[in-house]
Image (cartoon, rainbow, N blue to C red; front, side):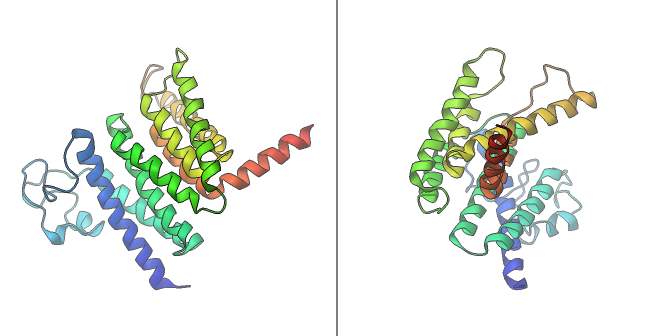
Length: 254
């Protein structure tokens, strides 16, 4: 095994996770993700370079600002670790191939959507609109997808979610509708149905779990974007086999 390649992929993932945290903090409140440089939101003290090392700095600082001791959200550490692990997993499957690099890009985008929607209940247009264009371009060179399947997938995902959005009583946000188009462009047709179906399963399980532990009532709002994002990443890797298994099983019944 190329341990150096694995280490590099993991390191890149940790850095991307750190950037995702910046996006999650700044984009929802209309701040620039580039300026000003990283600083403590409580005391505005600039964060020193030695405190910008993903995971390591959080552990050494014990999750607190060096200047004012304000707590740094545990989400910062978790997202960095998850991104590092996902990049490592993508590298182990695809290496530095076109699909591998593209998948790493998708990991960053869908993680950002996961964080923003989970905490702020919004899916910013500044992510989904460029994401749709990028997904169509990536799909054009992705052997299993292609531009035609990507365009049909985007239309199908958007259309299905728009239909659900228009049905009274079904809690689907406008951002979810637009995100479904991005997912459809990324995974293509007909795998988009696997992705959206899986997102509903994940959302249902999570909602049931919340009710069971009595953390919320039937009217508790649970953002749907994070489940779409997770399902999209799963479908990008295993969507086609899942679709093939489903079709073969369904045909076998009849």
